[in-house]
Amino acid sequence: MIAYAASADERMPHIALVAEGFDPSIPVPVRIHSECMTGDLFESRRCDCGEQLDASLRIVIERGGVLVYLRQEGRGIGLINKLKAYNLQDLGFNTAEANTHLGFDVDARQYECAIHILQDLGITQVELITNNPDKVDALRKSPIQVAARIPLVIQPHAENRDYLVTKQELMGHLLGL
Image 1: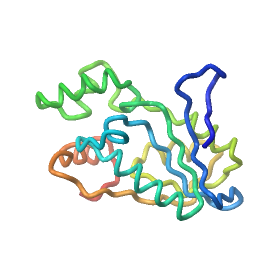
Image 2: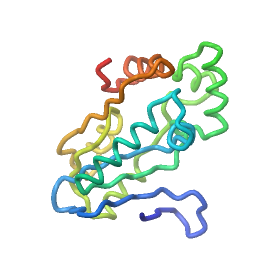
Image 3: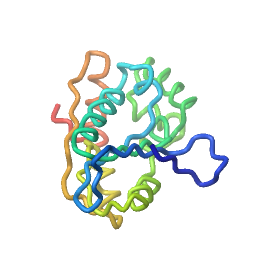
């Protein structure tokens, strides 16, 4: 585990988990995962984040990859605003509408930090573990080459089906629903 921060007193650094057998001279399986306290830690069924994290870790461990854990909760709006968005979702808003109703972009995440972390680790080529075309595009616009995309499709649950459909239809996520 390697912590990355802008300063030594940073309380919430980004983290890189580097698997045994990691070899930066070949395309590295990489998951860029944005923090989701409700899904990653508390196993919320509103999203598929925790299940994606678990599945990604299995791939990273099996194939000698890297997981970059970015501290940008709630697609970049923070935990408090994410909880406000949940309240709006309970009133019938979808995840995208809730974020914009609160005055945020649908997805405010940034991937520059992840790119810097990958470069620091000596990674020049990745097999990106994602369904999100924005992550693929962000890396393709960087010095990091995307050699392949590893799909990460999680079976929907009754509680998150609408959320996943919104991700697919409005955000272009490659879910095959």
